[in-house]
Length: 442
Image (tube, rainbow, N blue to C red; front, side, top):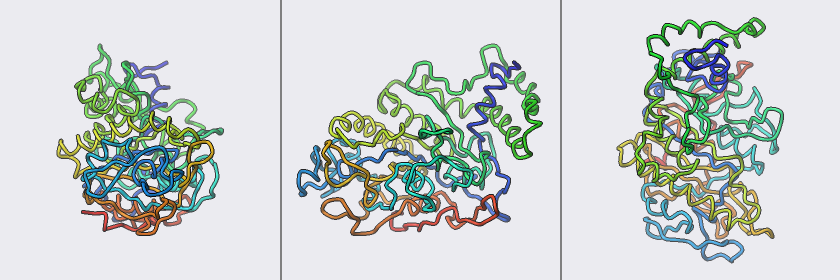
């Protein structure tokens, strides 16, 4: 098998099949469109807690409610007078004056896949049921950036890590993460694997000990040659495959991405602050990729990890502290490095949990009212926005939709949410149907 300095053609296709490093879809950007996100005002790190974290046990406790609503955890004071968080997130309580907490998130979808899809795309054009990703899906944010803002360098516009969100089925592809109607050429670049492993070396992004850059560049022509099977591909597939070879080459030869991925060269103290586990090291990696210049970095929590229909107390005592440690380290480090104002951090699940503890000592799906946490990027720090009733069951003030969150993020990044993209039939769609929530912006 032909090799490109340690990369087999199969490996390059594997990398390319999961990545595009910022390319135009067949439709291209709107005529006359100038994308500020090509040289973004802001970057975004979007942390997706798939499964649905409990707002009542974390960011919106109800200490005066009955025990069946309060749950197993006590509230604790935060840096904001009169504002309490759950006792399992002391780190976030200590930096609450730097956070923007929305307690009034709401939508109508109770299914995990439907909830994830609306969280990642803002689209309500779906049924409330399990399904796999489809070519007619609304594209995720990373794909939109790849479509509208072709990268000017080998730095990708969007990266996902450390895995795709998946569901049981023939393709295992959960909708909302991919290019959708913009085409797979707009998929984010996936950096997969466990960054807590000592041998972590994602995609083998090295030149090899006996390989020089000049030699690699001299063999770049190999990337322009398609496998024999390309003869049976349509034109768009040939275009995609050709660009994917080029993307792999650029990532191998660009030192900024390689340096960001080299966690073994990070000081031990910094790695320890994020936690020596997959989640902590992945969030550290997300920070490094963002600071290397990637405009959109999406972290995908392991599938339905936060789905706690039973045994909530023991489960949360296991999974919440590592998240709190890593998220607190991320926001604190960005502030210390002077990059928090240039970086929007979003911590969100697809919905919340039921107000009352069920018979299995857990909580069930609840999209009527839930919380998300944001920070940086020009958002108003120390803001607790919106309000739920005394059981955390319904929004009673300042309801916010996932589309509103995405519209606000786009606005902060310098992209007009009304910018039009076109589906495969040429029909126009704004990048967000949500409303920019100016009251969240500082």
